[in-house]
Image (cartoon, rainbow, N blue to C red; front, side, top):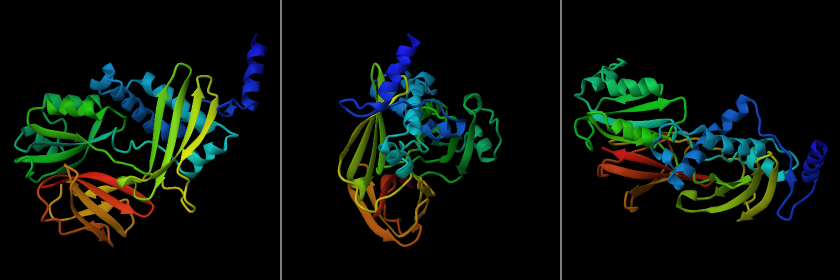
Length: 330
C-alpha cells in the first residue's frame, strides 16, 4: 500500500494536470525562512476571520490553526523547484501581503492629566493603572514614542505609540485600549502597498494562493499581473498560470519598504523616511476630495499650515511605486 501511494506521488510530481503542473514540495523550513512569511500568514488569517465574520473577530490573539494552514502553503511555494513562476513571485518580485505595522503597532490618544499618562510620559512602567499595566504585561508591549503636546483634534490629549514583538489583531487590541479611562481614540497603524498583494482561499483539499504585482500609479489604480498556485495538503504545488496585464520591460523588484511620516500628527510640515526623493504627493480628505498636491525634491513636505485639522490620506508617488498613508493634521 505504501509503495502504491509513493508511486502515485512520484507520478503526480512529473505530470501536468489539465490546469497546470503539480510538483512535490515541502511545508517545512528553517525559522529564518518561516519568519519571512509569519506576517503574511497571520495577516491573511486575520483577513479571513473578518471576511467570514468568524468568532475570533474580537480576539486579540490570532488563532494559530488559521495562520498555520496558510504558512504551510506559503512555505511550499517557497520551497518548490521546477516551477518558473516560483522564481518570479519569490526571488524576482518578493511578493508579500502588506502586513507592515498592521499587526504590531498602534497609536493611542489619551487625557494628558491622567496619572498613568504622566507616568508613561516619564517612562514609569508600571504606570499604576491596572488596565494599562495588564495590557502592557500580557501582550509584552513597549512604548516607541510619547508626544507631549496637546492634540487639537482631541483637546487635552497626548499621543503615544505601542509596539509588540508578536503579531496581534490590533483592531481588537484597540477596543481594549478604548476601555481605559482617559483614552479618547486609538488607531492601529497601517501601510497600503498597492504595488503588490497576496490573497488566499481555503478549500477542502488545498489552499489557493494568488500573488500579484502592479506598476505605475498603483495608489490611483494600476495594471497588475497575477500568478496563481494551488497548494495541496500533502504540500504538493500546482501552478495554475498567470493572467492580467503584461509586465512592462524594465520592471524589477520593488520590495515593500514602509514610508514613515514624522511627526504624525503634524502641524506645519512633515518628513518622510523610507523613500528617495524626488516624489509627487497628494493629500485627500476623508470624503476622497483632493486638497493639495505637489512635488518634493527632498524628504520634506512643507507649507501645510492651510490644511484644516483632521484625518487625511497622503499618496506618495514615484514612477515605479506608490504608497498611501494615514496622516493627521492638528
